[in-house]
Image (cartoon, rainbow, N blue to C red; front, side):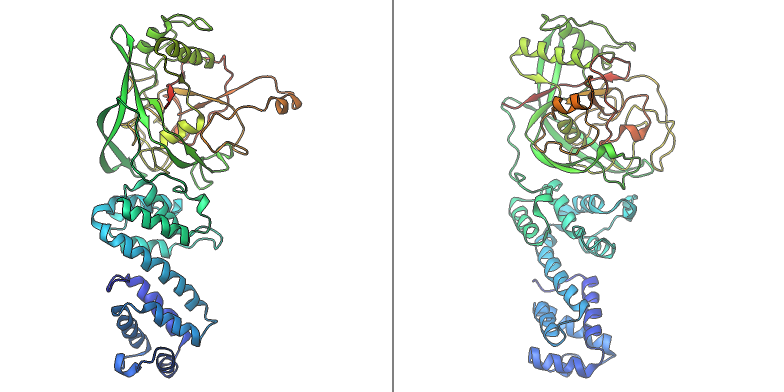
Length: 492
């Protein structure tokens, strides 16, 4: 433990524990003499008990012997609950401080984001100036929040989110991973479990693009702007029409929504960890120009209407296409390019939408009509009512998420490859399409297959555009001016 690196709130907690175990100076003096071979009067002789204990703590902290002081106190008073609790807290906290204090200036924004992500919904501060402005303040706030004894410690959740999203230097990342392995109740439940902490490996031949990611608070006010970069390739569809595919790195995330998330549904539970392999996803929803270009390619299994959309515009998303139409689009692309295009799995879609976030929306606690196309005449949190456009907008009209993907909230619903399941009980954890057990369906006399739609639409209220929101299953022949898609591709 480095001198001076013990947070002030922790020193106060140690003081409370020692005062509860030794309520008068004589008992404290005997403990210091017998267990630590020190003369208390030579260390701290002036003031009341609290002042004396404080000076005693400062003395042992200066010589990196705080744990020795607490161990000595426990030998004299082994049943004191506060001493037992503070012993574990000091061990966990000081070891973390040693790792992160040198990185505080560089990573304070990431630390604030990790604090926001790991706190329970009702404890999150939404204004930027209300977020803890130092690492020690973050630790104090985490320590002040009550939580069930069987729940994972908030300090562990904080480190988990920081390591998962914080771009930590490799040496400190390894130290943090070891810290988690020592202090987490269940390492397998962590986001970073089995996560590859090395830089992502991208497919060859990709170009790089830059973009700005915004984060908003519950009032819809921007509290952070961050420059990001991603990689992509351009697929030529002919006649000057291109399809841009963004590289999505491998990783793990918690799929679904907690009960504390406003307007969440049991269909979005149980929350479960999913590991995603690297893949490529359309930078935008498939446009009408792209649809027409592919619809004019040779048929594979079914005919395609080259102009199915009700709201016209070459750069607007195609709509009025059913699930089989979207699959045919992917099949024709495969025949045309030799690359295996497909619909994303539901897990891939949510992972790509969240882009490392855990908030209801990838842009934060809410959305506004400045950042997405949805029914903004309704509100989600504390934002003002916005503009309800009532029709689709050209793709890419609003800021992207952290992966460089546009229109993940609103505009048109997006078909996924998965048949509908009522909730996530028994869901795969590898990011694959969750196939139907048809024998079970037949037992229950269910004869129709339904498929998942994600993302909400220009007509949906904000709660139905959340990252975790699952539209009720739609039949594969269902069409409508709400329904479009984007394509995915596995990395080979």
